[in-house]
Length: 185
Image (cartoon, rainbow, N blue to C red; front, side, top):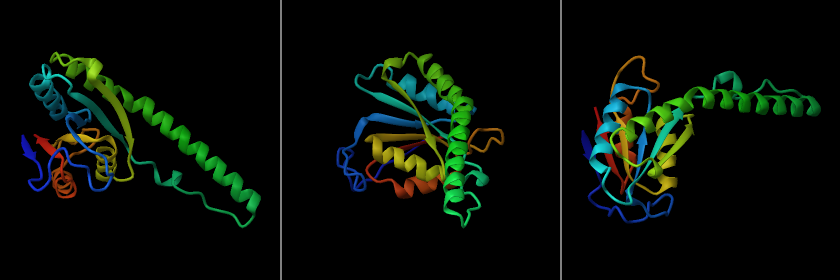
């Protein structure tokens, strides 16, 4: 495990981008369906199960929306343009509901693995993120949620739901300030 925290900013200071104060007892764990995530959940749950007031948010980022759902071909006819836009929004919402249905069990399994360590499930929140860019999605959640610690895994398993590679870990460590970053392998 690698822990990275900025030395020039207190963990209790407001995040400069969101202007929201962070709490070291508020953890965000980015999860996928890999063995590395299972090991990270076991470590964090065992370490913090008896620490009062610690809350954990399990965060899973959905796959990016397919390119064909990003925009429609357009039309010079304003009525047709409106219809195409409405259909595109419906198709996007349908795709997102389908992805949520497929991917939400990853969060449920992660919560179960965390509960097996004795960590109280009433202090666990499950959240899905919608990716255009995996790192930006995680950064947005960290900044919006007031998390004091971000836990990610670094692995290269080809069948993992998302590959948390060393490039992603490096980018997160560069772009986060005032937040502890635990990188687990």
